[in-house]
Image (cartoon, rainbow, N blue to C red; front, side, top):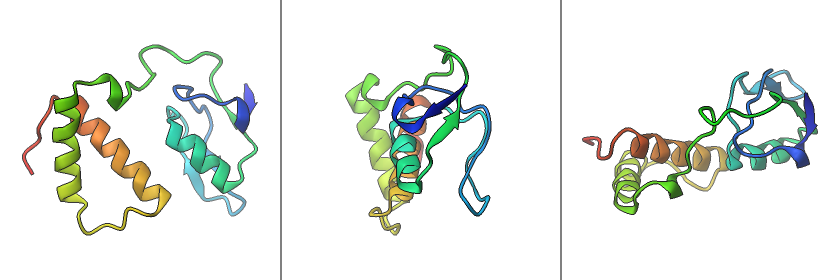
Length: 113
């Protein structure tokens, strides 16, 4: 079903790729929407997105806030070291950083730098 940007929620699954006016793919099909995606879609001027009827519990990403604080701190330290030369002011970089932290934290904790 196609939903307007204002009705999208984190955890919904995009069922067809989202592209800008120049046909550059912004989000591939089967992307599970995060809060960062919703902000970026608004910035890109996307009006509506085709999403699955109901998000699955298994597909819904677990937020970093749901993880133990020490695990998140370790993941943040690892990602910060690896991205120390990357300008964090750009929204896309912030999104990648947040996803990297979440992935490192979900991976079971500290990953050797």
